[in-house]
Length: 463
Image (cartoon, rainbow, N blue to C red; front, side, top):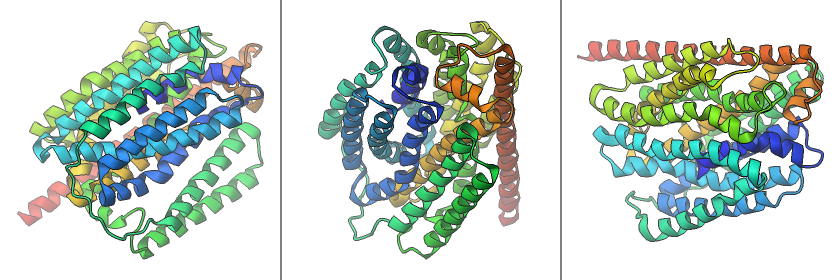
């Protein structure tokens, strides 16, 4: 349900932008960014709560809240209302995301976790594929509000099913541990200020000086967060977990991977439905299906094989395939056919699938059983932070090569009158985003290989 919602909203965004009165590109961005910010801010604390009170209880609560938020989104009349109701959805998503991997990890022994998480990934990808197709059909035939109706029967069934059938198999530690409120506020403050600076600079055109000042304030909040986490008795981010090198490099790699790909679908949705190709939501969704299909095929295969042959090779191979896909995407221009996109999209999707399961399995296996809720929350938080920052960075890069008014017109759905020169600038800006994505993936490969060599050397010394 949560992955379906991500793509179903993405594919409908151009239509939403045209339909809601007074909605501009900044509003469109914050329909996504506001949701991801809340998820990123609450994930770790929700993971901590699940370690204390039980994962299943909070998982059920997540289904219920997400379903209520979906109903509210469907009745939004303005961009501001939609952004606000998406925040309600995000709280429910936080409960779901922070517990999903931990519940699966609890249920399987270490030698089967890669396969189990790979199978779990199928549900995520099925939702992703359905989001592209179902979102296109509903938006084109019924209207954008209907994309949120889908969650109502699914969420109601899931809440009831989880209540009666999903059993708690972890060992909740009922204690008087407190939530790290100051850590949560400094972390959320740093993210909000950084993203406001980036999006206001890219879309509204605030001065470079003010942007730098806001980013400096964001950095101060991050420093405060770091010192608060070192001081706190029950920190939001337990930094001691990062002393485990497997846990640390796994999270660094997953963050860079999210940073590289977080903006990809958004950029492609507006490329396909924008002033160049003028696709309907359904046509755009069909064009993007190879990405999700390749991911769904390779995820379980990679998870199963990595249990048998080790995880490092699969992590590196997945990142490398996605890099090649992004490099091919830097050559796209003008009107594209389905066959122009199938190979690079399949490479990017297959790379994500090969990478995700073994990397997540290594992260979760490196955490002590009683702290897997926290570990799952940290890992998923870094994914959401990476995805969120990726969108902001993409808009900064795009605004460097296309006039702001043209960029605003494209993402606000009012770009029909753009001149040929502006369209050429838009294509060039898309290429820049994909080059940056490939560069971040190369960096993640180098970091991972360096880690692998150090681990092999340390193992040899110990032996």
